[in-house]
Image (tube, rainbow, N blue to C red; front, top):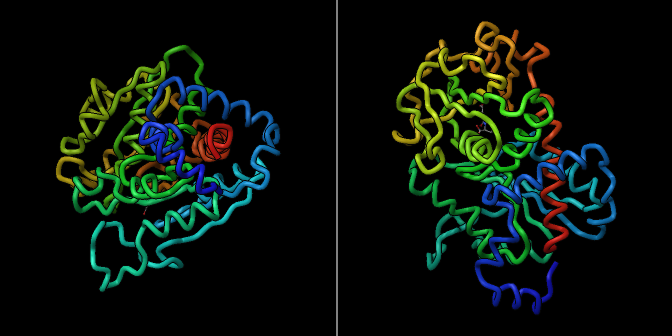
Length: 332
Ligand code: SN0
């Protein structure tokens, strides 16, 4: 909770101060690597900072379903001594208007301007999940909901998976790789996998961004038409032949995403892209979960010792805790 005076100072500090205090995406390699190290040490001593969040409140706002994100972020906050309030905004809140200057005479009952300011009085940190609609690429990549909260809230905002990014997942993924790697520069392959539904690009976007900040040999493989944003990919190697891409991989990260170029479309459901034991060989298998068994990946891989999916989910707690601790130290 902030006083009017503090809010005034924040406003005077302008956008740069605002950007520093959020955790909305992976911006700064040095900062991100500090968060990964902090997460690893919090895993070893979960209650080392159990007083830091005392009398502070985390408000978790969900526009979409969640299991790991909701439970691990709540646990992370509680390990820091914080109180937690959660609301499923689509079911329990008023329908929010995000556009400026509209006449609100239809279904939207409350404007983001009031909602964000009101929640900022109840909470010291706001965490938010808002998936893309997968209809218009321009709309989704504008991150309307996340940015509106950043703009109008007077407390730090944490991204719990937005339209185009899932940085908390990427932190846990990088931490998991760091824990399990057996040599200095592991080969990490992100492979597209089939799925019956159109899914966001948030997880692969953040995974690629994160891996480009790490000392790994990154290869991405997918059918033609599934190219990710050129801005996110940069000079990342793409090999369209999955078998060739997976050769000598240390870590195989499988994920479905819908097309970025033919935005939101399912262009292929080719089951030959499913991950099987023949493909994984000695490599570790990773996925953010939830995963469709025998569509994305075969039972035999998920049930093997090479699967890291449960470790990744565990590490969600420590990476969320590192982010919350950092925000508590710096801002709240
Ligand atoms: C989400 C996604 O971004 O792909 C969340 C992953 C952490 N996944 C899904 O929506 C899966 C839904 C399904 O029906 O399998």
